[in-house]
Length: 472
Image 1: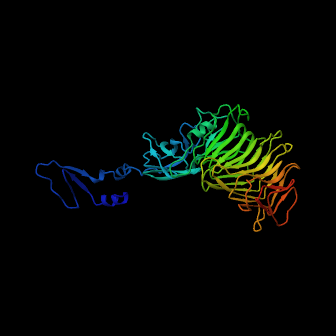
Image 2: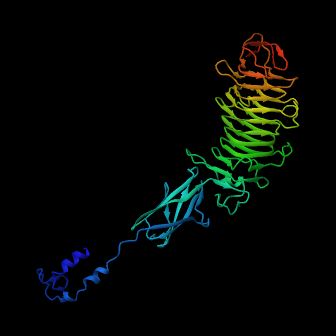
Image 3: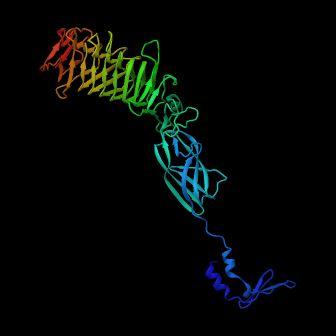
């Protein structure tokens, strides 16, 4: 009954008699049972306002002032795949909270909160989208929300961090890439985590090789600032920096390793390799963009051992070591293991250069082996080497430019070498795949439309074994 209704009702009452039931003068009478003692109350002495004031007030609406992650000081950061974290929510009117939501997740309220503080636990799974989450608190008094309350971050390491006390966030990073990768992963059917390696050198504290889980993205702050540092490129070190299976590597440098990367189905973007005996050993469907390789005996090697796999190479720069030895190759394409695979290679807008004195280096070597094969398409690429492009075996297609799609390639070679060397086995008749070179210049010379049938040798421009064909 409202306060005003109570006042209107009380004005009709002049006296009341209470027993087990009540009889009120002026409103009819209900007689008590025989023998029942009755008590009369004079309404003149009834304090209606006091009775009304004693009624309970409406619950106070909640108000969220601040949120932090328990165990992280004042930080509101939590990493991908953190699992269950505890949030400390401060404010007013928080007592009796019935629901706490953190973005898309419903949290579990921890017993024992107060009007000014509430504890809630929420699970952060692998692969969740990065960024801020809004926290919403509902109590009997209403609902309040705080935007940008919790930040979901990449799994983070910094050489100045701690593997024991760090939480893997930018505010409290791990110390090693090894530790960050050990907690990174994915859930079935969901994206994988991102590991961020903050600026600095990652070296003696690491366990080599680093092994990102499939799908995991590993990114540094920049190629000039985040460095995976090995102990030397000689075979005696035996160090392999990265073994990447269907993962993505971005924005970092790798230097002074025997083998810098071994990967299957991986992607590389804005990565710099330096002083590696072998910089990139790849297979499976792969993507290479804006990668540079210097002072390494072998640049990029791709093996066609997965049917239908394609490697796309864009804006790759490979510079041979200054003291390169016989056998250097900027890009080496082979058949790999197994049999029957047919893949494809696309090289675009790249540069492969031997600046070490033309010492038996090969810019691009294509050599299908073991019954595996691939097609090769090259556009807008410059090759400078003792032997520019060397063709061995029998690729399914060798396309350095066609009438319908100009190659725009530049190949330069030494006076004792050959800019394009078709060393496929000699054949009895002029059949097999034609190596097309329309729009590709050889030592600055643009050849007119013509087909050359081997055996042919025009030093230093081209050579072809018996009945193999070059088409300009």
